[in-house]
Length: 510
Image (cartoon, rainbow, N blue to C red; front, side, top):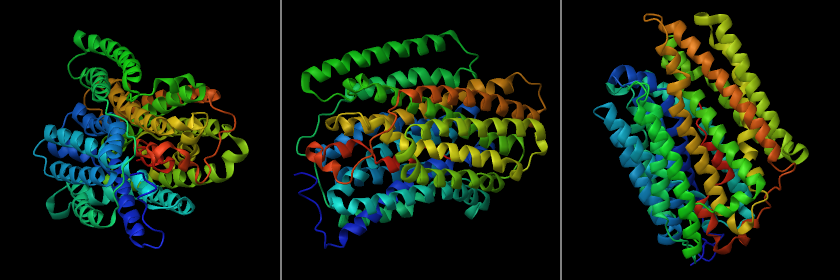
């Protein structure tokens, strides 16, 4: 049964209920990424979490999400997108409850790992269900609605997290940021079971669980020593583990070649890397994810612990950034990219780096006396730069990829971004906490300012590297034509890929 053959008839109003349900799930995932950052200092203070545990609360989610994205899409192809979507939503809701009632930081980290894994089942089905439910001529309107949801989530996530944490509802302190998912998830399960139509791909690829295992082990061997090494005094085994991760990734490449020859269903389609623009685009996604993972965590710690701001003030300070991202993302795809091509992406990298340097200057100039309005201009410049990158990047990377591999390529792009985010969160131990360790005790504020400046310098340098990598992208990326997805064989691809609009939503914003 193909996606198209199972589509809900155009006159059936149930398809709009189905759309509302899957968009709510996408919104839940986006908000869950953004809502946690602003509450991290409160969690650390109230629960006695260590610096590494704070890193794992965010990195664990990103790691589990990245490791399971492609497999989650293929499970939907094989067993039914509605079924896997509902399983993912049920698991996500349960994991949210476990996060909200976590008895200690270790339980919270474990629950976040489970939550990321369940999101990897739920999120890849969103576009597949849209393809199965709506005819091609209606999908432009649907994707426009997805863009609005992304923009709303980017703005509301940090503010909602600040309000819930600062409000201390029922004396639960930070816990409502997770518990808010419970009524939404339960309603989604009840309505989704009624209004979403089932669909499968006619020739679904087989699962590559060995590939998933190798990716997960390799990332853990790399991330665990990075995150825990500082607290443990950087032991020798940590360096051995990080070097050994390279061997695991080499084994992954060898196994994926074998899997391709055996049954043609590898986790990673290695032939894609022969496409110059795709290989460069994956490098851009990875490094961009690293910059975001570093910045948003250290920014939160800088404002709330270093400057001593309350959680609500910190959340409100991020609103100009979120609005700027949404505005720039909208005009970049519709107005700028068709005219200027990859120059828009490169301008975004330089603009974002400029904003970071402005912020670095302001942090040094005003020190502990800096105000929210003195941060506003650097944040707006940074947000404009990010918006110019995140919205058109997926199309630019995919533009020279063969159509038969579009689904695998899209899934790999989003997976790589999440891997970069997890790696960036691990590197916080080096670029931020490493500076704090070298300072004299009793100087928390100034030390955090210095550590924040050091982190901004690293992030700006990485953005310079991203600018250079972008020269390998096509000068004028091909824009996806409405209805072109019908050409994908059996519509299997969307199940392993998220929409370009949703890719933006996966970016962790303040």
